[in-house]
Image (tube, rainbow, N blue to C red; front, side, top):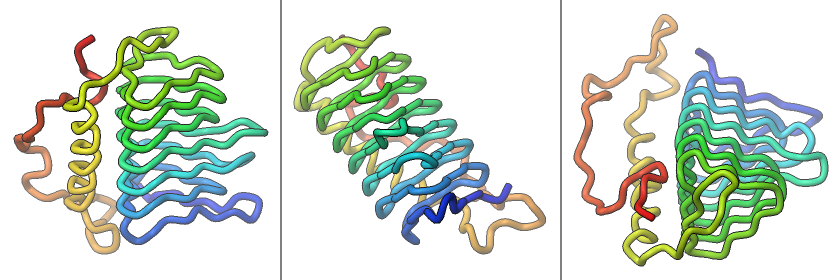
Length: 204
């Protein structure tokens, strides 16, 4: 369950001590990750032909894959939440964006800040969305503008994941005999005070 953080063609990932990288994630090549960001179980960040830039207080949840094109890297802003099994490919995600579970964002797409991409959406090549957009469907379209309440909720979930990452096992001394020593209450759901629902589950 060791976490591979791999040098590739002279590029070693830049990971601050405040970042959390879960066992089983792969971070390779020209990757830069901001403070208090988290990369969860089964994620792959493969920067072998271009760069990947992740802002601060951003969470990439389990199974997320980030790759790039030969002429275009991937940039993910600050306070971004990427739900489980997202695929981001050679695209730009602004600050305080929620990418719903299973969403795909393709080459050259640009998502403005404080936007939501719904679960399972397919954001096609070159798609552009202004700040504050709700993006739904396959192929994805802008359904409407977000309310102020929805915009505020995006940052709430990013900050929640900063706390969740802090509660994960200490990477230096919790791995005992190949088994991570999770806290006893690790799987006990805790109530969240927010009118906003995570992972792209929003009303049209």
